Amino acid sequence: MNLTRAQRYLLSICSGILLSISFPYTGSITPLVFVGFVPLLFLSEDLKEKSKGGWHLFLQTYLAFLIFNLGTTWWVANSSFIGALLAFVFNTLFMSLTFVLFHFVKKGLKSSWAIWILIPLWMSFEYFHFNWDLSWPWLTLGNFFSIRTSWIQWYEYTGVFGGSAWVLAVNILLFQWFRSVWIHKNKKWNTWLISSLFMFMLPIVFSWKKLPILPFKGARLYNVAVVQPNVDPYNEKFALGTSNEQQLQRFFKLANSVVDSTTDLVVGPETAISQGFIESRLQGLPFYSMIQNEMQHWGKAALLIGASTVELFDTKHSRASVYIPGQRIYYESYNSSLHIPQKGEPSFIHKSKLVPGVEMIPFSNIFPFLETLAIENGGTSGTLGIEKEPKVFHAKNTLAPIVCYESIYGDFVAKQVRQGASILSVITNDGWWGDSPGYKQHFSFSALRAIENRRWVVRSANTGKSGVFDEFGGTVKETGYWKEAAFQVAIPTLGRMTFYTKHGDYLGQIAYLLSLIILMLSILYAFKNRNKSVPCEE
Image (tube, rainbow, N blue to C red):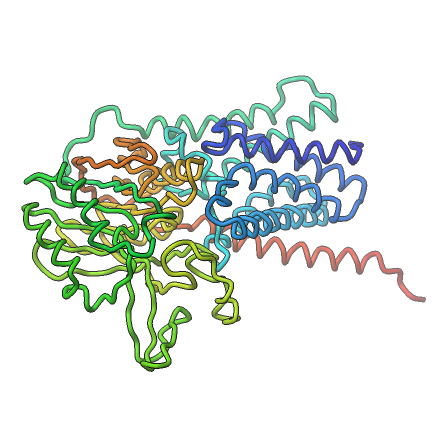
């Protein structure tokens, strides 16, 4: 190969565009993701042959991944320009550094099989990105197939990491074929092309075999009413002078239009009770009396709804604790799920996976002064309190409350299902992003959680899209954007545990361990070669 600098930058732009237009709702041409990394692999190959430094590759891959990030998640800027800028800069940086690391390890090992280490290294980056303060796994490669659920029924065994490995494996095989055609001038159908076609089609054919032929039968049905109140999050939901009673009146008007004597559960969106209150004082608050009065007309239906809540502590409870000097106590704010049964006490579960920069200031446990940089995005700014582990509501049927950002985390939801959840309920507020691909992408990701755990997913959004997914990721019900809506649907309560439910993100963990082993071996190999190159003294 002998590419010019302009040709290398053209390849990087091509890669960024291919990845962008193959992502859901920023093109949705899903098959192109299987060639999205091929231009970058040619870049790596060319720079390896020329023995050029990693700075060249870093700049060119940074351009590719910046186009990818901007092209797919530009809508984040509708919520917070500074937050979006930081997300674009740092997420692109992490992707580029991962690819540069792959380049140097491959170059150092000097083996034809070394190209395959891209798979564990990239999956390790994705796994790490699920599990630290700057977590932003939106662009995980396995998420590309959220709108192609008929291709990925095998996610019940692998989760999204299986999709990431699939994408990278096909990219590597196609790269090997393109290289054999363009560099080695092999014009025949060789083993690389046959292998890449086989690798592409085998998971899809297997997936088609998993799809149901007949409608589902057998499980007990659970009637759920879903409400989308469509409250403007910028100018209405958290506005001064707005009361919980006012917003609940709107909610109950919609709920009462669909609730009947058969309804088992009514689901409302994230922070539908938007004005914060102390949890222990709930039952003495006027809006709680209003809730009880409305619910007594429902018959047997319970309520699951989002709320902004507060708890008080005598001592510092976590990094989210804020001291009140005059009262000598600490308070913590939460983004909570509230479950109110017809009989019994109400209960709360706090959101665990927080949005960096908005609900949680990354690394503020190490650098407390960072709390002053919190992004105001309605409600309480700064780091919120969390549950240390995923929790479920043990009601008539065990419910998994999944608040907004938590729905991107497959392992988190799998832990809730392991606790007995038979129904997955996503409550969210997607109105921050405007009429953009953001709320559509977020909606589609719920299909992945349905497939991974073989559970129906009920989704109530403040606005955006509310809806229902069956256990195969099929969309049973879907509402429109920026519209008030309410509907009722009968959901089968399923109990089977999938392999993924039992083991979670095990593929990410395996990739992480493999990467550590590969890196140690490459370091040892480099030292060995360095010692060989040192001339002996006489």
